[in-house]
Structures are given as C-alpha cells and as structure tokens.
Image 1: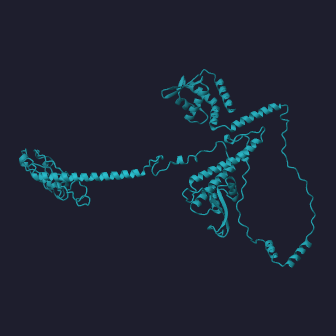
Image 2: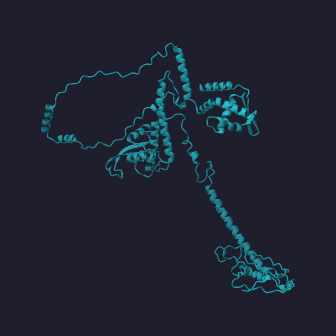
Image 3: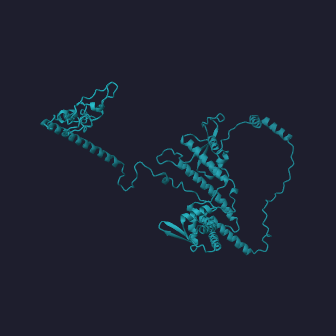
Length: 548
C-alpha cells in the first residue's frame, strides 16, 4: 500500500483564471457537467512543482463517479420534448443535439476567446424552432382538454327552466329528510308498564318481519316468535299478536297458509301456518316495497301514538266520573290527572286471528263411534237409540236459585263532613279541579319555570351567604355561579345556575341587580334587605303561578 502524502489533503496550487463557458440554448440537467479549465502551465501561479496525483490502491476508495461520468451523444435528449422523437404524436419534431457534443464544440482552446461559428448559429435556431413547435402543440392539447372539461361540467349543471338548483347526484341530509320522524312525543304522558312491554314487542316483531320480508322469505308466526323471544327474553304468544292487531290493525295482514317451508321436524309442509305480511305503500317506480329503517321508525311512532290514544280514552272516562266532572281538550293534555292510576288501566283485548280450517280428524273413541254410527243401517241405529232411552234414569230438576243483585260500592259516609257547609265543599272541590286542570294542561316551559321558582328561596339564602363571605359589593357572574354550584344541594351546571339568577333578578329587581360591563356581567346584591321577606315573596310568586 502506497503511503499518503500530506499534500494530498491540501491544495497544491492556486486556482488560475477560468474562461466562462458559453451559454447553451438547450440545457440538460446532468449530474456530470465538466468544468472548463485552462492548462496549468499557462495559469499556474504556484512556485511548487506540480506532482501527478497518486493512483488509488486496491483497498482505497475510488474517486466519485461524478468525475468519471461522460454522457454519450445518443443518451441526452432535449428537456422540452418529454416524448420520444419516434412517437406517433410528434413524428416531425427533431431531437436536440447532445450536450456532450455542444460542450466539445463550444469549448474554446486555451488562451483563445470563445467564438460562435455559423453552423453553431444554425443549430441554435433549429433547436429554438423545434422547441417553439413543441410548445404550440402542447398549448393546443391543453385547450382541447379544457374544452372537454367545460362540456362535462355543463352537462351536470341544472337547466335554466325555473327549477331550483340541486347538487348533482346528491341528496338532502338525513336530518332534513327524516326531521318529522325524530320529533319527540308529548311529555308527561307516561304509558303503563304493560303497554310499554307491548310497544317493545311490536318493535321487535317489526324488526324480525322486516328482515324476513326484505329477503323475500315468508314470515310465519313460528319464526317471528323465536326471534322476538330471543330479543326480549320474554314469552311471545298469539295473544300478544292479537293485541298488536287491536292497537294497529293496518300494520299486518294475517293469513293461514300451508306449503310454507319451515325446516323443522315437528311441523309438516302440508300443515297450516299463520303468516304475517307487513302492509306497505307501493313504490313510485313499481318496485317491491321494502321495510326500511325509516319505515320501521315511522310505524313504531304510530304504534306509540295509538297506545297513548287508548290511555286517553280511559283518562277521559275517569275525568267524567269526578265530582265535579272535568273536560280537558286532548290537544292540550300534557300529563295525567294526579289521581288517575296509570298502571290500573285495563289490558288491551286481543283481536281474533285467522284460524286453520276445520278438518275431520278422529282423535278420541267417541268420535270414532260417532263416525261408525253413520255407517250403520237404519234398523241398527233405531235399536241402539231405544236401548239408550231405557237405560237413562229420569233426573229431577234442581230448584233455581234467586239471582243476587250486583254488589254496589258503599256510599261515602257523611259523618266525616258533618257540620261543613255544602257551598264550602263545592268551592273547595271546584278549586281543586281547577288546579288539577291547570296541572294537566301545563306546557313544558311553564313546568320548568315552576321548578325553578321552587328552588329560588333556597338559592336566595345561598346567594346572600356567598356575598357575605366574599365581602364585596359586586361579583362577576362566573364567580357567583361557581360558588353557588358548590354550595347548593341540587346538582346543577353553571349555565343552569345562571338561568336561576336571571329569573331571580327578574322577580326581585330591588334586591338583585345585574350590570353588563363590556363583555362581563356583574351581580350586585342588597345585603341589608330582610331575607325572610325575600323568601316569603318568592313563595307567594310560586303559589300564584302554580294556580294559573
């Protein structure tokens, strides 16, 4: 291995003047562009003698390939022509000459200024002409593509014939299309437990029937019963199906059919089975209707409304039996009467379902004898009847028992109300009926306001203690809400607490005032006011609004 010299790691001569290479018309990005250098003998200014570079040994790294790269004339093409010159799209575009040839031709000799000959000028002009022709062809292709894109975009735009503009191939969002189905029912009208179970049975039954109907399979009661019992973990019988038919008769069509495959050993194909077919509206395009998720939700909502109407009938009869009787419009009813026991509403009577046709099937000995008697001769039949008459003993008729009248509920004894004026009783009953009527027809906003009014006396005491502990005449709304949320017994959010404070300032403006300064709201309290009178005023206000 040859020993390295110190001069191999440092420059051995000063760089001399270099002649700037001429600018090329067609530049090609290449990793190896040799620099033009003048001979060392002409430009060297160093006093040391130039030494030849040491040859690399077998175990030394060779110089980088960047110095050894030489591009051939046929490997370098013009950058302005991405396609090959022999491609069908550009058959008459000449390729740019190689960069290596240009460098060799344009490299001046040592000590001579760079000059361009006439053939070099012609070569540059031909290159510019070819590049210009290629640019024109590319521009024409871009214009054609733009025109095609505009034609395709105009085909999707709606026609200007007065119709509203709609997005191409898009539908309205689901929260707009099914907004009516997502509306909640009337608040406060709670169904009995058995009615809620029946509504859940209808939902499960509708789900199973929809799955079977959508895959063109005949829904039978045996299949639906197994699926509903697996979903609810409850017994599901034909009686429940009859109750569903009573509440919502337009939901299903029940028939007795045979020849329906059941894939069960206990049921023969020739036996009659109860089939359940959902009644759906026909599609506009004439296709078979499908029991989709939106229709399932709509049918479930209709069934719940019919259950509420069924309970309203019993509630109406209960109001008519009161003293004095009450009449509440159904559209204004928001809750049941306090004395109306919802769980004691009678159960729904099941409707009659189709039964299989009666077929003659002998199962007992008596039926066999009756059938054999019809095959006997008339003389034999007459002899048997005479024998039966002689063997029968005369039975004495039993005396008829007198019919007992139905038990009537005992009338209320007036001893508890002895000495009380009848007019006073009527006024009390009328006032109680008016209060119950207002409670049944109260809207949810009024109910929420009454709940807040009931909490205000306690919140007034907590608010005064907060101001006393802080020792400040005014506090920001955020601080007051945070302190009161931590001190109040009822769990509330800061936003709900702020609504209570706004209601308190509305009812008692002389005791609690709100000041809006820039973006903040400050609460100012009169700590000198009597707290007992404040709570009494709030209680009177709550009683007054409760009687409305």
